[in-house]
Image (cartoon, rainbow, N blue to C red; front, side):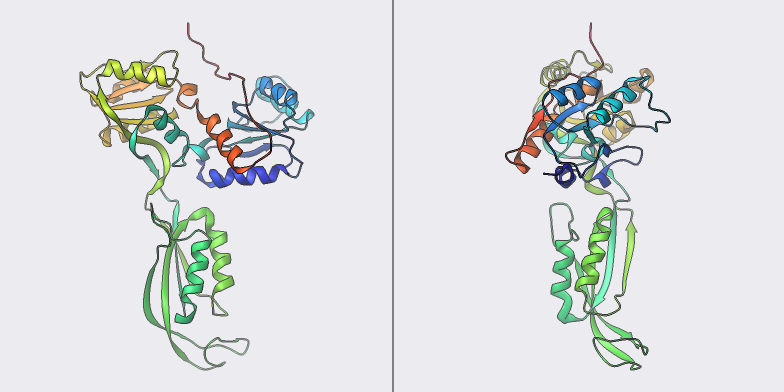
Length: 364
């Protein structure tokens, strides 16, 4: 099995197009055409993880955080990033990072976070915008079903919990072909008025190539009339953070103790108690200070995230309990999820969970 085949499976789970613009995801080191010997899944790719991959005969490391985030001008081994990359290259080990592609997935990092806390009725906290496009095309009635089904098969027509969604309206199309034309209906130089159906479907923008390929391959006309629009709609199934509900409300102190145990936290920094029960909980794995206002607007009683600065605790505005549970801790079950996914998708192949604890933060 080629490394590329494994990466294709990963991108079925978390398309790289889901990642944030600032991120550096995908294959960072290595050749995807190399035969895979095994996969080691980790949180952070460090030298010790590469050593583990060597020992376990894995030539692909799938990590959550990218080891290469900003550009490298030199690779001389002067810091941990350069040393890790050098060791990986010397030992023909590929490195693939998934990061915010999985953060933004509805079953990804934040759903895993919610599941660990037993939250129900979950939904995306910060839905992704400018990610949906709309295709409008026109065809003869006899071609509608074939064309529409081809567009659905390519990924169009998915809205929330529904598939095969489209809007279809009848109209009259007109055209006149020149000497080089080969019209489906009518003759060259003949002005044609023809019954047509207008088909409208939405799709995620990274699927545009597949959608257009399906359109051109299955459309009845020689020249395909179509338009693509960028929509400002929020995508309710893609985005950062998540909000859900505890099965039973808890006092604030009990809630934080519960979180500490479930997420195995070394400590929790939090805003002042408001003496209100906790029922509705917002979460955002990793650095989530940007979503404090979203958590408040959602009506959350508590917001769990990481990497909060001193003054950001004031932003709770006595409207919710704001808690920093630790960056690693908020994402700690992510690598297990990736291993479970790959094990189901690729049978009889070594998919190994790294035993290295790469959390750089220690608690006294």
